[in-house]
Length: 335
Image (cartoon, rainbow, N blue to C red):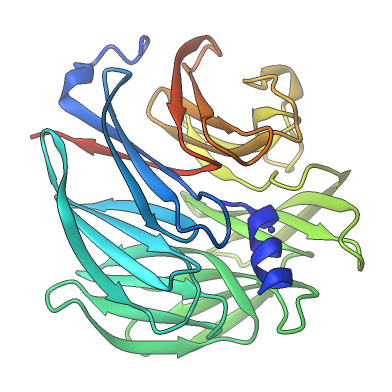
């Protein structure tokens, strides 16, 4: 998710243990953004907590990753690229396929019906990559800079994080997949960033800034996708990279105060159930898969950085050393 610190830098410069199922049957991919302008973004591959492969110098700001079938897709923000790698039991088959997004600044992605839909800052749209031809066959224009994107099977839901002038936006839009048209706009509060579909609810983590970007604020919103009721809660001042929301331990979690905490139905945080107690200014990213919670920490945005893996009891299970600024995570189940 992701991390507004580097997004703003881009904008202004140019911000198992308990999982004792056979751990050897899965690969963990961790992407690191690298340093803006340096093309040193990377993907590290782990099995059983051991590094088995590191793919270095993928490009400038490795923004997000996604596993679909037996491939890993990588969006490289400031190189304006999609990379596609075949996954084997030993990691990624190199060199992979590179697809230019033609200066679009890709952000986040989701797959539906063998098409990869991805958001783009500079072109302010959702583009459509056909996964049979690897041809970008369509784009859906948007009013503002889009961040997270998720699918309910019929519609795409997209967070509009900033306006064209880089002021904080406040909407989530629903796009009909078949027509490519925006069918509804929801006002959810300033700075919608990451999205999570959980049953009938769409959770929205939000991060926004003062006019001079000196102060950061955060909150959570929720859209009932059936009734279309909207709930909004602001928490006040927070950390720059405090906007991840995800499913973990059968509950919705979001980053909070140097860790991740479950969300109540009224959007308040279960602070006593928070997992992780890292410096809130150093927690860069978070995500959860089954009984593994990943917390990516960086103190100075240079390598090496560390991802701390906790179980659902909050116990630290692994410390994974990665490149600069760990930003996203994906799991591949070896068949």
